[in-house]
Length: 338
Image 1: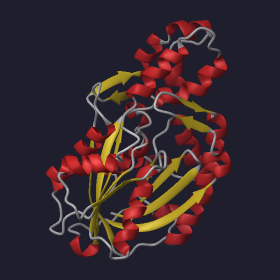
Image 2: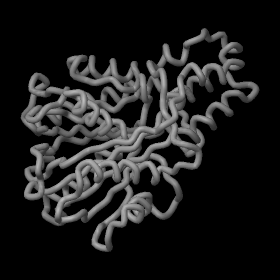
Image 3: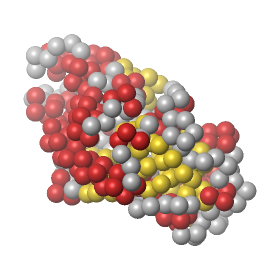
Image 4: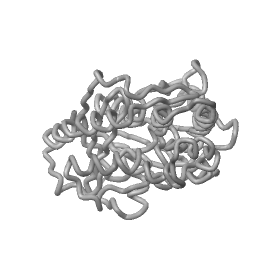
């Protein structure tokens, strides 16, 4: 896929206020860890995640997405043409219906001419939402769109802790639920516009998407539980990413040397290391945020890009590659000329 007229006008995120350390989770799981003969510090040693954040109890995914969108509007404003689409890409849902996008559009007071819908694509959702609205912009059907993701991990983490403290839990069950204990919360919003409404030169170039649905059952999640075949998922995900990376470079005419920053989905140390090694990415050009924030679902890749820009790792004119992988398995990589 290639885009000629699509710009990322602005991106913003909102951090949940409550920090929960991995050490505190270990203390809660003390009886299980002692029974399994696992040493203190095992969770952080296995995952590289030292902390994650929670929203206050009762704070919905739509509340988080609205907060990120309002943060973006307060800092950057909206184009004179208005917003003709709002897409929510959160993994979690507040209700089966209505879609989160409708709730956020209502919270923001968007009008009758603003299309709103949800994109469900696991942790790849935000990037899939970006491509959906980029297609509409490129075709000239809309001029501007908001893509949002509000992720909350409190419910599934608390449910997992309760489950792991039940009698009879063995090491295999602990391993299946380990990835759940890396989940964090976050909210992100991005404003994409047609080039004629752009005030900055952050152009979305396009990229490539690949799928491996034969691995669709390696990670199965509900609102209260997520079971993962972590080792197999890691290998299959890296295999899929390798093919997607080659396709994206070929599509955009790029090489590793030309890319200033690789914004990877933040999963954990093992995934980050495996991906950078297999793809041959310079480690100093792939920001690590999982240690402080955990795996924040669909918000991970845009949060990484926004953080890289804030830290001066991506400057005007630099090339960045957004690299997302979602359970299913699906992978998308998108180039941005910042």
